[in-house]
Length: 256
Image (tube, rainbow, N blue to C red):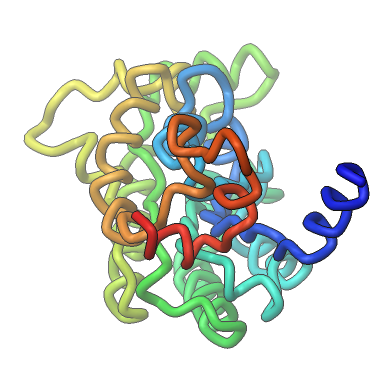
């Protein structure tokens, strides 16, 4: 009988829906779930409130990103999305002569970001839920060393990355979205930003902490209203746990 009652309860309980924060970008996003990564830090902050989904693709640029985005997210997903970060540019800004595979011209980069924003809006993810992130600053000496170890010449310049960062800022403003201007934050006042990078391009542990700090300032207002999913263990009815565990999030909020 007890087993039958449990099955009945399970059959009538509504599935819990976790809101989602989608992290969309290149290797700096893909690597963000590593130990001390900015993505894992954001996920930790949102535990029991929101799923943080890593959709970073190492080596990808905005051209490839706009093409594959519809295969990752559609209108059916939009209702559960609390925020999306769009973090491209570190590969787009590669020098055409040295790295034609990844290079995307500046004008096209801007247009690709606009297309990404338009697509998200079309499927129900409003511009207010989107946070653009500019490419980071580049430490050319360290990146050149990394390139040479792989048999390449220096294929990125910090000044060029700055141009792409500026374009990203302009697109975000035109689209009505927030932007984390990582390049400017790293170079502000001529400060030494080398400690934020592990190889001249990708983030170090300190750099990941830096991104977490500034991204959370923008992200928190988009997720602060989200409830804690399922009650604290000390609040569960020990005699009839179904009374606590089989209510919807909305009903749980009303009780608390």
